[in-house]
Image (cartoon, one colour):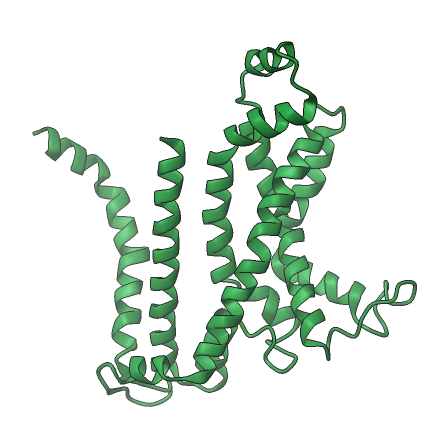
Length: 278
């Protein structure tokens, strides 16, 4: 009876999860076994799309770009979140500063990307008239840097709020005891505060990894995967295959693989998070 009451209470949530998460995923898996343009009748091809995908140099290249993007964004996202939260902790302007940092995440990503392009467009952008903005439209390195900086700008405020919330849970008595024992401020930070921020860092590593693996909108609006494919992350490669080349069955196979990679990474990092909190 107890299990029946538990599952009856979970019923509405499980129903919504099944309708809006499980069912669409199963449909994508089904589409991935078709050769389908969306304009004609689908042709069942079994696992042929997956065989093509795993041997495709374009998919391998996009996967490498995505992992490189994650490696570039994740340490900066976590490091800047921790350093900024520590710098703002207990300052008079803490709330105002955190509000300003969080504001970019409240703006739609489309509007934010258009604003960045208007400011940083080489040659005619508003900042290009007063600052030496590199020609990132034709430079693979600088285009990659622009996308990384945009991602950090958009999500840094969220990371600061997470770290700041954990900072406020550290007992004052613990910090005072360390100071009474003769610890300098930097020693208190290094040996007391930072170890107690491990749960926040582990949580941000999970969130940051998912954001990096599923990045798409910033690339689409700022660089369109260029120049020369230097910013063609898996999300944009998926869009190009599905909605520019109309290979919807193959795009569905890419979606399934991307979801599996994301779930594996999130699962491993969730285990890390559980271990840290234990």
